Amino acid sequence: MLLKKGLSLVLAVSLVILIGLPCFSSIGAAEPVGFDEIEFSGQGPAGVELVKTNANKITFEFLNVEHEERYTVTQSVENRKMQIVVTNTAPKYGVNVQFGPDEYRNVIRVHIPNEVYKQFNITANEMVIQINDFNAPVQATGERGGIYLKDDSIVMGTYNISVSSGPVSIESAFINTDIKVNVENGPVTLHFHEQPKNLYLDTTSCGPIVKRPDTWAAEYKVGNETPEIIIVNTKGLTTIKVE
Image: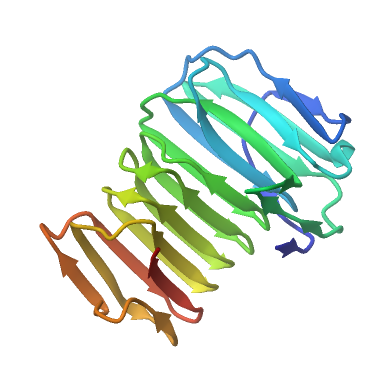
């Protein structure tokens, strides 16, 4: 995915790290778990992956990032809120982002302790964010960027995802938590690796094109009709698939 200038992700932080490392490198911020909220924001272009770790500190890893010297990463804790900011200081240059599986390109991976959080806020401007399933209410907002929620199972957090222009992708073998998606202009993909036994899925506010399994209605109900997944996508393609 080619991201144009202006990609932004802001994670408010007091420790500033100027990057000038090799193609695959990592830097760690030895911050003990002393927070119960996370605020992540940034300015791109770049790809950012938020992953769970069993460690008790935040660490950063740069995966085949071109011109690492153009990026700053900061973090700080205030009133038990961890604030993380990633900024591309040369936003006029486009970036080709790839999240594997064979190769990562231009991705900053942020390792976050696998704890219970009262709130997890994500704000991205022209940045592609891929996030694991965290044990928190997650509010993710993207401007001219993308939000990808991907994990083996999505069961711990609740998700409210809003993107003005750009893709949203949700992918897992098993989903058992409520998710709301609102996209003004961009593709939305909901990808189940296994046929769900329990689900309420509402795509009645999607258009103009919705691709779904042949036997699925726009308002699809199965089993106990939970979790509840509601997708609003007014202009882009919506794809529901099981494979």
